[in-house]
Length: 233
View (spheres, helix red, strand yellow):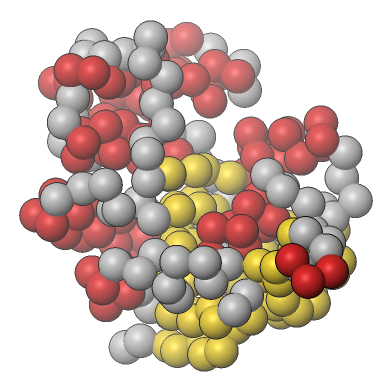
């Protein structure tokens, strides 16, 4: 890392357990992790290894059982639900494997939604959203509803929604899982380009080899613990 990098995510001995006694599941187990500005990092591991749970506790969608989570140097582990919601609104973009678009909103309105929640003036929202949709090659689909879009187009809208508000980090949970191989490859290439040219920080959970091959860093989770941390050239 260069001297001017900034740690935007840090976990210290983070644990997330479910159940108790003999049914106790250590989904995330004593994870120490630092993510710097501009990283393009994938958390790899088989289903059930804790990848999605780790993203959920980083974002505050779920609470840690023990340990601490920091975002931009501030400990967020003790934040209230309202403070966590505000953190997500201002600092985190999300991309989910099931797209999670609002079906009653057009592509434009889905991408605009976070900006509207932030109180950005309408003309600024319009310029920002159309620029992002154009960058992702779907400006001509702005008035289409999710049901009128292909899976790949829906995921592009989801990415537009995630990056339109200039988040500190984009958390992408298995973003290519429901896409065909050609569409998935195109989206991975596009996200890598956003990272390279726009400096957007991405943290994935994925076992898609296309994402792992493209990532600059790959963390391997085994039974909830980091078993390997590889830097790719």
